[in-house]
Image 1 (spheres, rainbow, N blue to C red):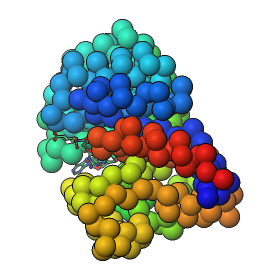
Image 2: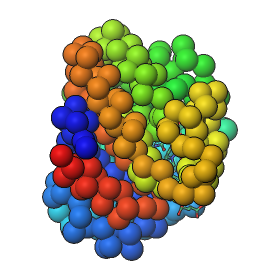
Image 3: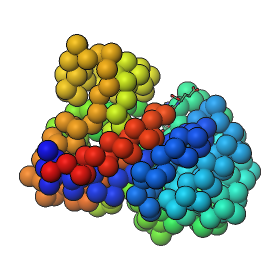
Image 4: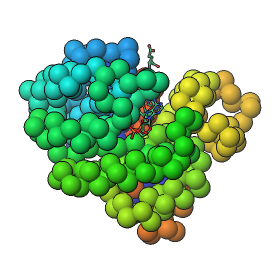
Length: 283
Ligand SMILES: NC(=O)C1=CN([C@@H]2O[C@H](COP(=O)(O)OP(=O)(O)OC[C@H]3O[C@@H](n4cnc5c(N)ncnc54)[C@H](O)[C@@H]3O)[C@@H](O)[C@H]2O)C=CC1
Ligand SMILES: Nc1nc(=O)c2c([nH]1)NC[C@@H]1CN(c3ccc(C(=O)N[C@@H](CCC(=O)O)C(=O)O)cc3)CN21
């Protein structure tokens, strides 16, 4: 039974795939609503051709590509321009997600996403909308004050440059922490669309592995929060409970504004698309 609040939160959801996951998209495309935004990661084990091919596949199937740009992984301005130029050639440069990136030291001239945004390069390649990262449960290596300061600066820089902003979050498990964080974002005067990241249905061991790797939910007891039980540790967990809880919490906090959902699929595009289809249909 899906409540109206959860269904509203699901409406206009976005998905994510890696540069390697074109086979997954081939398999899942029939189940994904036309016009859905699909993000394409910028991981260390992908190259330019894979990222471009994935963005092109998204576009060719009638979805909206949102390629990622990882500032700290960029080795030069030329590399940034080559990527944006190739994206523009295939009509996939209008929307991007600009994120700091995991390398402990920057590999080139961009230590953070703000530097990429302020470079003035994005507009020259037709970028109109930039997603920036948010952290409802904090970040393991970056203090909260730094995260907030950069969120505000990036938001202001995008407005100055005439670029639309979306705040896209790291995946989260704690619906109450997300509600509070959304209200904190609004209290700082940031009115942009917020997309709350959450994992699609995935094997629990796998999910916990990713959570550990990205430092999510370290102290919140995610096993409990997400409704896992020890008996189903070998099984699959879906975002049902999280969506219901968060939908209800946002409904009672109208100041939360425009909040949508982004699914990190972790190799399970079809499973996520099927889950979303069924969740929307249940009543
Ligand atoms: N979907 C994804 O791929 C997501 C990735 N992330 C990761 O979160 C981190 C921060 O990203 P943004 O919020 O865009 O940061 P940012 O680019 O706005 O930078 C904010 C501050 O954190 C510092 N910083 C950025 N990345 C760092 C790192 N890996 N290690 C140490 N300090 C770092 C910057 O120097 C700056 O002071 C990155 O590691 C990023 O890859 C976060 C959310 C989602
Ligand atoms: N700090 C941080 N860094 C990230 O890179 C990151 C996050 N957070 N938050 C979630 C997103 C989603 N991410 C990922 C990472 C891997 C796969 C993935 O599908 N990996 C392949 C295997 C890759 C390999 O061969 O190493 C898979 O099939 O699991 C998907 C999304 C990366 N993302």
